[in-house]
Length: 173
Image (cartoon, rainbow, N blue to C red; front, side, top):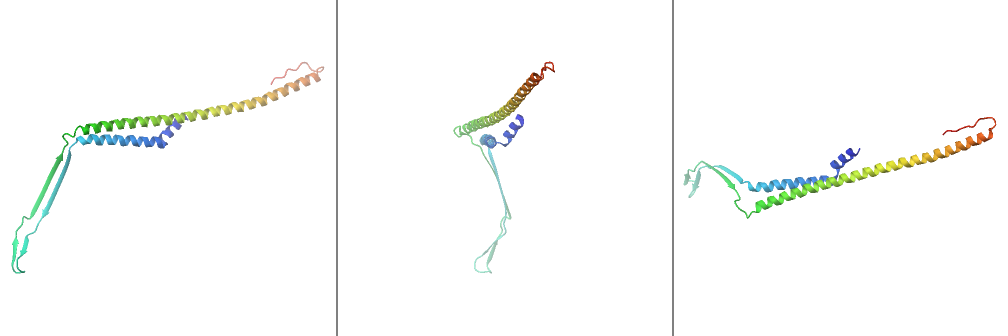
């Protein structure tokens, strides 16, 4: 049916799938541009354990041991937020939104074009089927017309030949 043909075309057509991926990509780019307003937060932590420092001044007998802090821990939290970048973030968001709208329009256009092509092909096939039926009907009509003419001539001949024995004969075809 036509509905099945449209469904198969919309799910399997490579051009539609390509424009759908382009739309999804534009949608993701729009989300990423909006995320530029969100502050970036970073966390860094480190831990170290040190042993005592042993120094040898003049040979193995003269050594000096310096006690160290046995454990060192460090933690950093960094947050960055763009305060003003010359309105470039807002312009990038508007540009991404426009790209997303264009991608959506392209997707709808491509889908409509493919659907129109499928409908056109379907109607052309239907028209050809009807023409084929008419040709077959015309050919069978020609055959029936010849047969009817033969029967009428035969009835007329038989009627003329046996006129005296029979009443008028009406032949129906």
